[in-house]
Length: 227
Image (cartoon, rainbow, N blue to C red):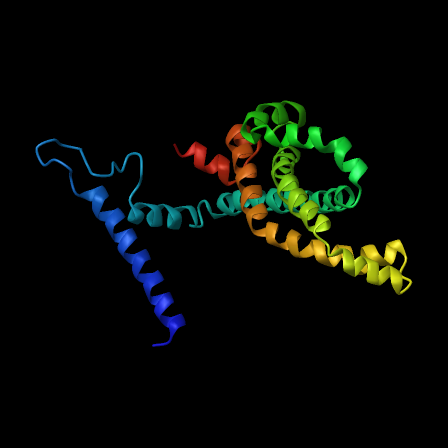
């Protein structure tokens, strides 16, 4: 058995044992003399078997359209917010990363806004933009923008000065230096931020759906309505 198969085996084993223990702890009572007292109360944390059963019910012909509409709404909002956040964060990080004066001017405002908890801004965003697609996109954008911005900013600042001097020595103009030296160097930092960005974009959208209720739709509404 090669190393990759061993790793996959142990991953699967951990998953099976974890799910099995989860199912068992929601069935076995903690104290046999006290009815309804379990190690894990299935009222708060459902059993894996019940989750699978519920999934098949939601995927049945009776309600399938609603489930996939909810999922599509969440995915659509997530990717729009992610794309807008990455685009604006990359451009802003690139511009401020290569312009010290602008960086010093905007630094206190960026730090102040980034220090605000995004959850606290959800009611304000919903009051301004409503409960639909736009509000969810804005919430995702607010999270993704700063993740991408700070990575791109650091990447633009970390470009090897010798590469820039060599390009200028060979007669490259500022636009060519930006396109062939600075942007490729910054992209490595930007790509590193994409994985957490898409995860946090999804979190922002689902939180917006929690608040938005039926008007916002999506998986967040499906979760909150099932409680």
